[in-house]
Image (tube, rainbow, N blue to C red):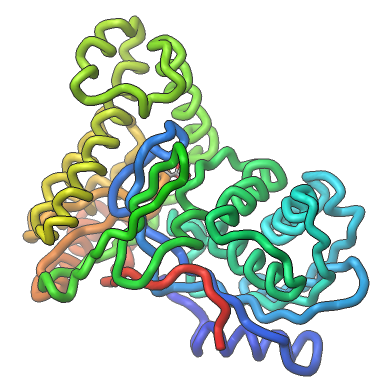
Length: 389
Ligand code: GLA
């Protein structure tokens, strides 16, 4: 998880001045996220419990009079520019610029008059690690354009718009979790989101007070076929819901699970359905424990979630399973893959004084198996998207 040196907000502001001269009107930040529990439940109208990371993407920007958007990013040290024609329909801007153009497109499609702008982007959110660098980018750009244009879009409606940018303009069939987390999370809390009606409850997640830490372990595993496999999991879930005659798998409760499974012919669909139904229940159980202040007791639920992703949803890879097993052997209270799967990150709930031992155990297990060394960082729940002052 290495990042360029210097504060990310300062890098965005300095990048703006280098590229365009003068000072940006403002800076807007949006974080990456980890999902504490509730994986592949969002597109099944279910429950998720993410929290925002301290790593952020920052956009420094000013408004321009013409309908043109010029964007520099420190990640590729490249400047792109697009006009109204390019955001008339999806697909014209590609690469990382599509996430920016997609937000302009989605705002215009929703009837907003989007101001032209010059933007400079810096980020500490690692790319391709499953920590929602794309939602962070979309949400920081959205915050900037809303403010610069004086546009009125209530915070609870912003995630859908950013998701539309990603689903339709970029073309990735993701659910509503990432943008909701990045926009709606608060420091010190996990966000309990009902993905059916998008209602939220901020759940206190005070790791410090409990003497605990969440260690995020980047597996460094290459994302193998992640996009195609993600879409395949969605299709299986939709097929399961259809066969069971429900609008979404969220409508099947754990009590109904055995009889639901007995009605499915296909063994693979049965496993996919079992993951989603039990995972929704694990989110509810985790929320109940956190509401009762029993943070350390959520460990077994995290690990059960991992086992379900590994055996039933089949979205883990050897590097990920190795990290979970090594963390648990070294005393983690619970550990699981977080995010879409096929690589990305593992989170482990650990006693504060075991953080280094757990990180060392994972690193040693990787070395033994000849995997690329993982990176590890302890994190606390950070704020969602905001304007910086
Ligand atoms: C990715 C997607 C989310 C969600 C997770 C799995 O992060 O972007 O919408 O489906 O995978 O929980």
